[in-house]
Length: 496
Image (cartoon, rainbow, N blue to C red):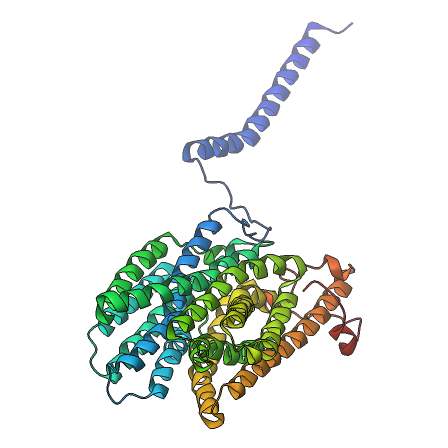
């Protein structure tokens, strides 16, 4: 039995152990409690979260507002420019600018388009530095200045500066500022949205071809210019304020001139498709009304044929975009470009009556502007979404040559032959050459998709033509070689 002294000693030892234990617990916990108290008082911000998922376009939503804005911008830029044939007929008939030749007037029509494309690197730079809205507002300023300035012209060189040069600059800033926005908002509906926006130029051409002629006859040429300027200012200003890009979300490259793209064979084929398309398109756009008078129709009937050509463009572009999303954007662009050449050679050459010309204007117009309806989604397919602005910027500069000289070339061919047969053959062959470039481009794209599928161990049909493309990134190596040879891919059916 233990004594009282032993019990006292054990009790003292137990108390000492508990004190030491409690002291260690307090010492270990006090920094933690202090740290927790400090975090509570200061309310430290949460650590940043990294989003590993890439941005995906909403495939609609506010994007449809942007489509509507682009539609009306195209109607009041390219659509207004499409009515130049009406101005041309009045210039020649009324002899407003004495001493001016038909060739000079032909250059003014082409100059406005070529300047719109030539100014594109500057417009791309302003988009990168100041934003899309500023670029659009600059375009509004130049276009209104051109139309109002043209109403005070007395000599041909003044018309060159206003309706040719200045109007082209305004059209260029508005076009470049808006054309790259639509693909950023859509995925599966990208071609439909882009073609719907592009159809604005057709409907605008229809409206203003008829309205311009009526205004010139009733209130004079000079007031026609001023009214068009007021309309262009109002509509384009509203659209510029409503248009929104997604450059930050997409991380798009806004380089004005990325020379590295010239090292890519696929990009050269893309440029070839556009170059030859424009050689045919400009001739068809500006020559058809005059051709109608050459075969014995009246000037009024010729203006109706030109208006119906624009109506064909307006009606044809949305279906082209819709089916592009279904059967492939490059496939549709190539097929419709081929149809434009075929119709020019098979229908236009033999069109000698009013009815046949109306038929050709509608079906030819539906496919003539395929390039404008599909260029943005096809570029995204070939170069990747991030490189669309830079790729388009170079494309516009390359297209300055065909848009400037195609109509004068056709005019010289006509003057040499004494009829339009040579110009018609030229138009059809240029479209067929463009279709051949598109055919080679789709062959290349199928090969790229085969390489991606082999690298990922998937089927070719499961490859996303835009998102999975190596060109859509930073130039990563594509990996294995295509699983089929080039000739076989030329006749292979794939959705590209």
